Picture (cartoon, rainbow, N blue to C red):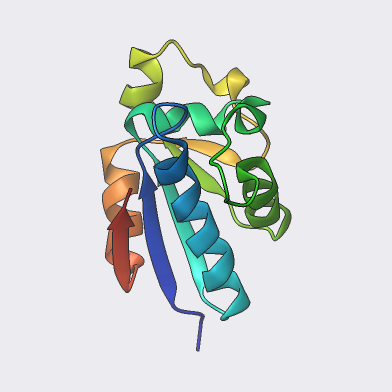
Length: 121
């Protein structure tokens, strides 16, 4: 039996560091419980997929977003980045950090259908 999947849609970055950090905290928690995190970056959240950007987002009293992101990616999980949201912000595939990939609506829906639950921040 494969691990259960739980999905997190991150829609914030520097505009709301707390909401940007929470999905990654929960993703790490899911990993420790043997569940597979499925992370999708949309809206301002797509900036979290850009190389070096994670270091620029810090929520007071919370773990390092960059550290959480590195933990997820370092465990072999990938992060989907919304293609229309990237285009709107002038972000290209070359700007993305290793472990992040571009996905449009069909990939997002496919990922959502595979998850037990989806949370949006």
